[in-house]
Image (cartoon, rainbow, N blue to C red):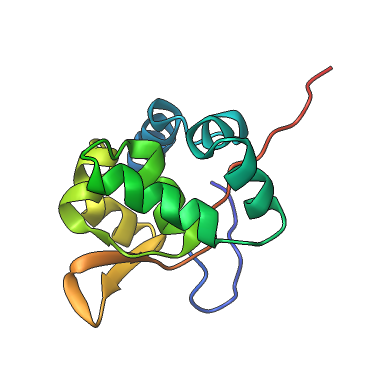
Length: 132
């Protein structure tokens, strides 16, 4: 088994099936560098790269308002923009893991101001690397 950080409050889990479910959910959501860029569009993605969150936040809100919120929109809102999302949206976006699994893994928590919402507990960003 992998040794985890001894830092108090560090997200960790030895629940390998739940971790596999999360990996599958993130993959299916398209929560990758390219998937996020495709969802946000060139300008909002470039702004996010400069730590300007408003264009990405607006893209997430527009998708939700139009009824076209996707799993990648939920992930972007939650982990990249820092917006709380409805628990039911998290359950739909991450069907294997669900909001309860995200909480169990320490990746999200109920929003104390609005218990029907889930907020990020960590900064979880997609990354890419070259294998060649």
